Image (tube, rainbow, N blue to C red):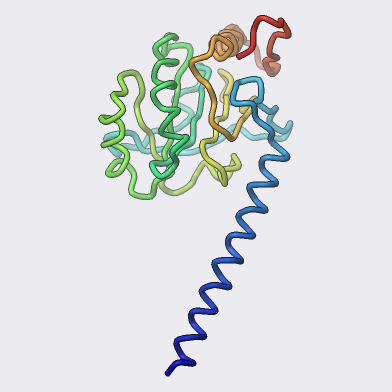
Length: 207
């Protein structure tokens, strides 16, 4: 009887240790390959072979919305989840960022990867007092075919043609003047080929 109890316990300890080691390796690799200072300066250029994402999301009424519906606008695609504390911290700042721009030119799309969709996200929309953002949901992980979504929050910028330009998988200070300057740059770009924004080098602009 004692032997039966000992073996499962040892197995549980082994599995917990294995998961912890594996998780640490992933996080360490992510931080090493994608260093972040918490500002938009840390955005990374998307690979040249990145495809225009084709995906259907669900809106706050659980109605399907094709990502192509936002073509013609600069899109800030923010991937988040209710169990991610940094994600929840970002949402009010993203709400304020959206208020600074006309939605005919620029739109923030907070896309939740929570499997239960609107049932779990709606309370946060009300609790955080969001006035300028609509929640979208990717319960089937459709966007995972185009973007690395193993880390959240994750933000991807799409140009007016729907093409991914840059990304950052970390918490970001969206209230900074630098974030506004970056999107002002992208909004001004109307051609077929958009170069990635480069932060100014002036010493007086720190974030």
